[in-house]
Each structure stands twice: as C-alpha cells, then as structure tokens.
Image (cartoon, rainbow, N blue to C red; front, side, top):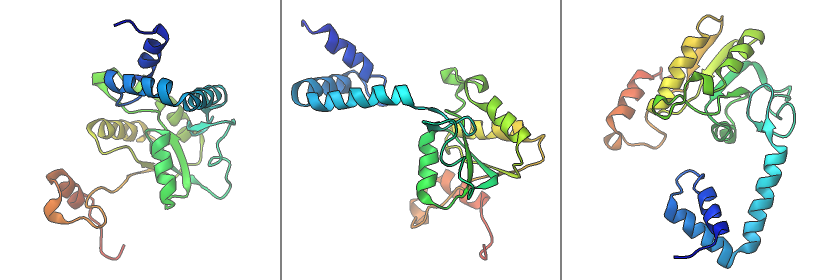
Length: 200
C-alpha cells in the first residue's frame, strides 16, 4: 500500500517511546494527522523546546534548565543525605511523597548486561566523585526492586564501600493496606528480611 514517507518517518520516531510497537505507532501517527494536527504541533514544539533547554544538573544529574537543579540549591535540604535513584521519574516519585529531605543522585538507568548496559554507560563515575568530594554521611540506595535494580544496587554498594559513609537501602515488603494471603513469596520474604521493631 502506498503511503507518505513523512508518515513512515513519524511512525518510526514514535516507536522510540517505551511500550510503543508498530501498530500503536501507526495508530498514534494517523490520529495526530487525521484528527489532531494542533496537538501534533504542540507536541513537536514542546519537544523541540525541551531538547533545546533541558540539560542535566551538574551535581545530581537530574533534568533541569540551569547548572544546578532546585533541589541541589535548596539550603533547607539535608546536605549529608544522598539518595541514589535510577531515573528522574524515580526522583519525582520520591519527591511527591514528601518524606525525604536530603539530596539525590540520578544514575540515568540501571545495569542490564543483556541490553549491553554496563557501569560505564551510567553515571557511576560522577557518583563516586560526588561522594569522595562531599560531606555525605549516608547514601540511601533507592533502585527499583527488579533483577536489574538489585544488580545496580549491589554494584553501587560495592563501589561506595571504601568511603566512610553509611549505606542503606529502602525497606521492602508488605505495602500499606496489603493482606498477607495475597502477597507473593518474594514480597513476603523481603518483608521478613527488612522487618523492624514495633516501636520504630
């Protein structure tokens, strides 16, 4: 079937989004061209603007539009507490909770040997320098509870072991409101491993 080369290029571009395969990319492309050209222009303008203005914070490596992000320049944040996360999205999720008042460091991914992502492709060197040159007293490793996230956490812990800093991990286990009979075995095992005293 004959089609526009521009539409094909748009479909290929949309496949760069996570979870978007050929059929979804085609559906999105046709929707934007058929019914929402204004929306398509808004997306294109916003994307071009973001590409031109957004960079990474020189300290924590998250997305920002200045040399240092708002969190890093906030004097009310605990300068001795550093939370290591995989992505800016993880940082935002923790910030929305409002329970953490320290600083962050974003690795920009996770170790994944199957995908060819080794330590050299993430920001471990910058993290190492930050801990070595700052007055960090505790590093909280907050990687995702996946095989890759655990590998990333283990590597981070080993890398930072030579420094005189306390290294902790986020507690894992039974979620608030969860019922034991519906928990999977890994979640229950993690809950026992990370148990705490009732007075905490």
